[in-house]
Image 1 (spheres, rainbow, N blue to C red):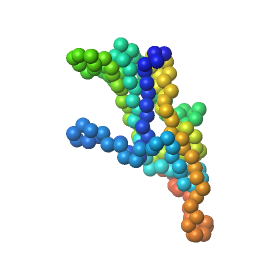
Image 2 (tube, rainbow, N blue to C red):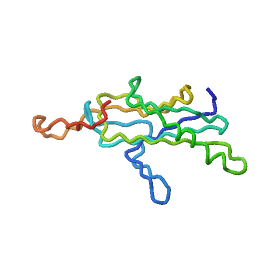
Image 3 (cartoon, helix red, strand yellow):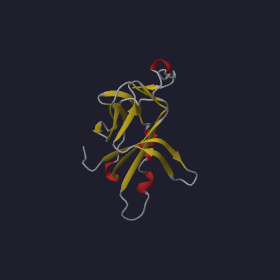
Image 4 (cartoon, rainbow, N blue to C red):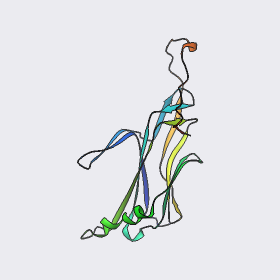
Amino acid sequence: MPKSRTILSLFADDIRQEMDGKVTYVGVYQGGMNVNGVPPAVLPKLAISTYIHMPIDERFKTMSLELMLDNELINHIDVPPEHVLSAGVSAAAQPGEFREITFNAVMVLQPLVLAKGGILRVNAKLDGEELVGNGLRIGFVAPITTGIPESSTSAPTVPESAVKV
């Protein structure tokens, strides 16, 4: 695998595309997420923005992304060939010394059910070669004591459409 290819994922509560072309990241996690309580937990939303950067002469023809929790596959995406082929078109047309391309993919998990803690990461396969992404450590911390009797609290409800991990 070429050593000049890199992958980086940002994990956030939300990612918003602004009207002027800018992107806003809301609630970016820095290395870890502590979930209050015990599993399972329901997160209303988790957004992941993954960047793959490389020299233009290392352009790839096929690409897939895998969302993993430790060694468990959560989601697999085969990127359509037309998206892969268009990734370097604008970069190739740039004048001067600009010889790099960046591919960005956004995954939004809404809601996300966490059955356990672990390391959540996005890995990419470019022409069959794997790039291992950075991870978000997800851990559970002891519930906060509220003084409310346990019998009056209820477990969170899990919607049928939830992404379960």
